[in-house]
Each structure stands twice: as C-alpha cells, then as structure tokens.
Length: 277
Image (tube, rainbow, N blue to C red):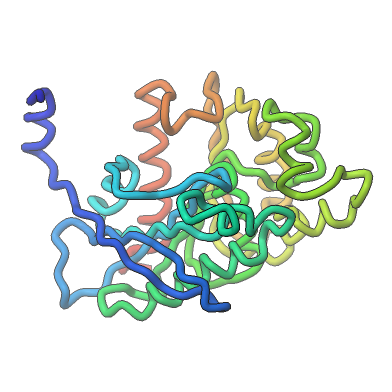
C-alpha cells in the first residue's frame, strides 16, 4: 500500500521463518519456528538463540517480529517455540501451566533445545536464551536449572513470586490464578516456584534488563536477582536499568531506548556465542 520503507529494505534482508514441530518429553507436540541467519550457509554451524514469549498465555505465529530479524541479521539461528501455556491450541494446552510454572513449560523448552541441537547447521555449544515478563521468568528459571546455555538475557522478569504478590498492576488475582492460592496459604510453594530460590545454581552469564517504571513486574524483581548473582560471584552478570520506561519498553518505548536495548542484547550474545570464545 505504501513504499515508505524502500530505503530501509534496500539496506537489509528479511529472513523467512520456517515452521517446525517437535515432541516434548511426554510426547506432547510443540509448534515452533526457526529463522536462519543472514548469509546462511548449510556447510557452517551457527550459534542459536532460544526466545521464550511472555504471558504465559501469549503465542508466537506467522507474523513479522523485529527482534527475531535483528537476531538473525546478527548471525544467529533464532528459535521460538509455543510451549505449554500458549494460546491457540485449546484450553487444556493453555491452562497446562496454571499452578505448575517451571515444570512442563521448562521441559517443553529443553526438548526444543534437544531438537535444535540436532540440526546440522546449529552449534550446540553456542546456545543462548532470552525472554521477557513470563519469558523472563522462564529464562531466570532455566539458568538456575541447567548450564546448557552459554549466555542468557532475562528481561522485565518475575523472579520472586512471593514479593510480587500485591505489588503488580496486574492485581493479586493473577498469581492466585497462575500459581494457586496466596503466599500466606502456601509460602513454601511460592518460594519453590521462584527463580530466585535457585540462584546458587546460576553459572550462565546473565544480562538483566528492566525498566524503572515497570508496574507489571516491579524493578525490585530485577534488583533481587542481580544482587544475588553478583554477591555469589559465580557468573558474569550485568544489569541495565531503563529510566522513564514501563513494562512495554520493547514494544512502545522511546525509539532511542528501544535501539539501545537491541544493542545491549546483541552485544551480550556476541560476547559469549561468537566463534572466538
């Protein structure tokens, strides 16, 4: 309808996603997409970045997503699965994670990593993981449960379910529905399902991004994780705070800060996934 992006399109190559399907550990089919990197050569092996969406009841699909194009344009295989909890596959699939965060959703991601590692163009020794909001929760959870990734980026994450209760603009009902009950009904369960409880296991280099005016996942969630990882000194960790931005930084933040965010993410994965390491 328009040709407003002609100059931009002349400078870049947009990559076409490929739909794939794999089986989780219990046999559940999981739909996912792969974007191969710019200048793809089947004779080479590339680093891969696993992206986990938020929600948890969001979904990936056949749409243009600037983040994935940027990651692929930087020389990475991009992998993004619709793990259990995603919408679009029926009520049972979408509600499978309710009261069970960090269990089958984690298995769905890791089964996808197994599939990804079997692809001849993927270097299984150079894997990264990134996610925001619930995807940030999953990223923080993942690095507390496996050392399989060489780098991770946890954005606007839920890291402590207990302290988030009653402090988020989404309301206390969200955690009662998603986790089950209240923190005073089952304090131990809230703690056990919080990534912060497994911080002693984190060895993966971790980039933490958070906006200072995030009311959905207050910035104290990032501060807790950064402080713990930094104090333990077992993993390289970096914490970037964005002033005057909300939970929606990546989607509707100030353009200069959205560009800066891309820079932090791409440089972090370059640092740990490049061939030089």
